Image (cartoon, rainbow, N blue to C red; front, side):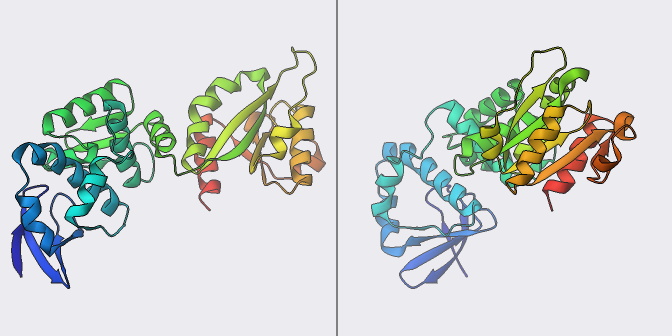
Length: 297
């Protein structure tokens, strides 16, 4: 097998010839994968002026890395490089570059808190389309400061906030609308927002919490919001009539409904309601696990 220097990451790696193309295997542009470059383009690209190489090659390396990491086959020629450099998909700001790192970590983890090893960092600054290691380290420190990721040596973990940011910035993944119905008399709203809603986003849902308290004036849930939902979570803790009404309305529209109730009130439910068999929870953390299991089926 012939070895050849990758023009874009400067690593010498095995290459195979496939027709008019050279396949570069396992360089930093495509770790564990490959990309193809038109054989007749190698010398013209190699002869680019130094400043052009400096401005362009790290962008091409990052472009190859991002596409191949998404299981796309990358086939290039010299004629493609200018369009890559001028593509609106190339991130320019530090914020956009940071989002690419968050998206990479999300692709390689099953959820927040799961470590992803990036080693060595010196071979991976193309993850953020950065021209050098210093910028990558700066971006990592900034993401840490914003509470979006945790670094433990060479392991990187997305926080709940970081996971949501990765999902939102990806753009291609549209979240399905979901209504969460609770009676807020026991102050569940804040706890649910912090513990449960990020879990739902991980499984492709954009939750909107609708509450009703006995101390407020009569408040009707928005039937329009419920009708547009792809999933409804109805918590029977507090036995709010509005929760029963909205949950039944969703069922009438053939919208899936997940019924839940806190264990302290499970035995207080009417017999006909017990037939629904709501999921019983003790803490918001426990309910997050239960919903995670249901949504992953």
